[in-house]
Image (cartoon, rainbow, N blue to C red; front, side, top):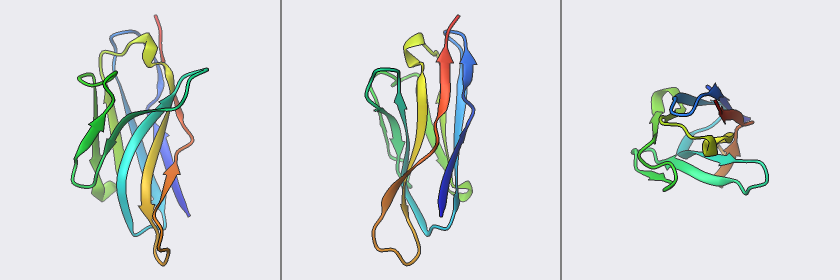
Length: 121
């Protein structure tokens, strides 16, 4: 079993900052790409940022320069530092990880439960 648990969401004023964390736990042999996605009410879930095991990143244009993704492989954890937050950043943020489990050939995506980020004055 694999579980991804997010933390760090909450209510923040425009221009403020939040740091999201996502820790993977359970039985797995390798974690490949990890990342963050978000979904606002009435909108499709969208990519925020992803990071490979060797720290190559992909970041959405809407957050580039404001959000920074990082990971700690020893802790099986991915982070999202969010600065200069805007009301349009309000969404549920989901952690994602591409994981290989022992004895199972196929890699597949796992998702966290989501954490609410609300940017409002």
